[in-house]
Image (cartoon, rainbow, N blue to C red; front, side, top):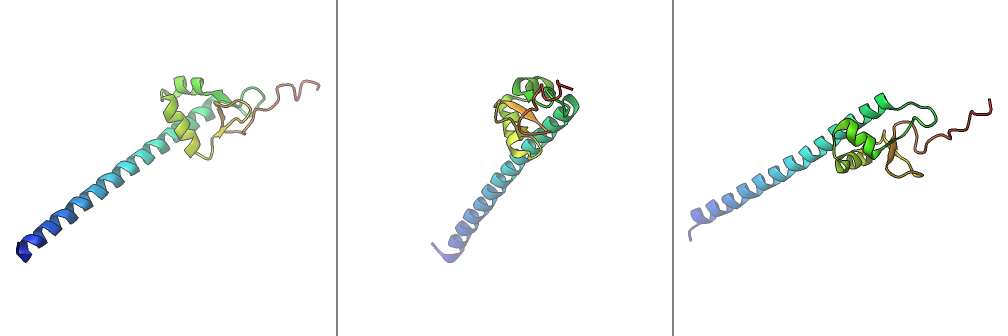
Length: 111
């Protein structure tokens, strides 16, 4: 094998690696973009369908799924990525843009 053939093989390997890295990068970027768009859609839906009032600040995963037409998995991933969306610690599967846990429904009942 002479130097010219060796150089051609090395260039072919390098070219293949560059294409593989570009494909991997574009696929990763696309997945992150879709997750960002899902988070944005979920945030907008929660903003339109919740209020910062007792018993109205959180929505269940099922309600969000039917309202946004996204799968449960996509909503969960989007909510984990979006720092503006909170998952309830008391009721896992409930999400809000207002706070982590819902307000007490009886907080203002004595007034």
